Length: 395
Image (cartoon, rainbow, N blue to C red; front, side, top):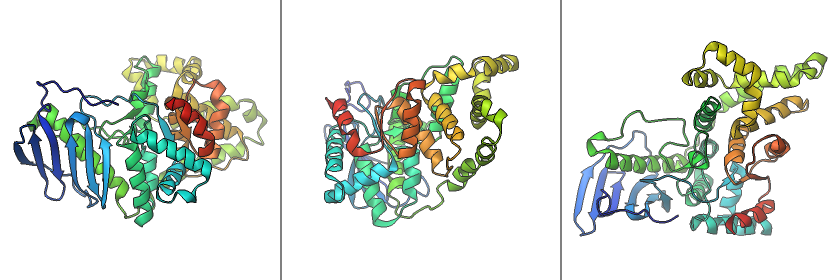
């Protein structure tokens, strides 16, 4: 990725750096003639103490944080957040192996060392993008102490600010596309946009009194600081949404228990799993249809005549639907709380990224549905097996 092209007319063209002290709420601007100006900026509440300062370099769209005794460099994004390099998604387990490799290389196998060494070099030189998702934020929040700091520092160092957009937002976008909306592309999924990993949107400008350019810039800096803080906070949050995920996993038990002994249910399994899948979409599906102008009659006809075909042609939804069908059909399947994040994030990463490392069960399901869904990522559950595909991406 190249430096941003800033014309002399651009508001940032003469700025060498913008530094923010997160302990005092002071912003310092340095111009190319070495003139210095300061301003007071509002900081988010409950920000925590991990991030102490940041310095933004506009011409490189680069921000350097001092946090928990570490120096971390991230891409911030100003005029553009477009993803234009190959993308690799690592499951939480593989980020843990990555952090282990970085701290003590001999604790991983020689084949893993080769993979993570290649990935680290490519990520630092921005030949490849290794984004962080909300699933990583949740899983990392369960840890505490030094092991969390080591893991979070590795994640921040090599993700460099890139995020996978919230899967709930991605699902809503795909649902709108079912009824004529714009289809998703990689740059919608992997982005530097503020709060993209969270299912949140700011309804108004961050600091409108500063103008749109500077307001957006400060919003990006504050979000980047919050993002760093979320990962580096040494205090664990044990629940991390586990109750909701547990409820989701347990909701499949009645259906999974009833199917094996019911011949009629087995004969109509495809219909049953479609109904369950559509019910899981909640209000988002009818909302997308209404937004597109469908009447209740139109929507009913779509459900009866076109839903299966249209979902099958949609990268993320098709993977969610087909893997769900296989799992319900598998009478020996064990439904667990952590399956929810794996199902969502590995499905959407498999749909839109280039290379995915994930836990064995979900990767195996995704491989089985490959012939039924639009083409997507190369899928692996062992880092050493993914090396050839990573090297191919970098060739």
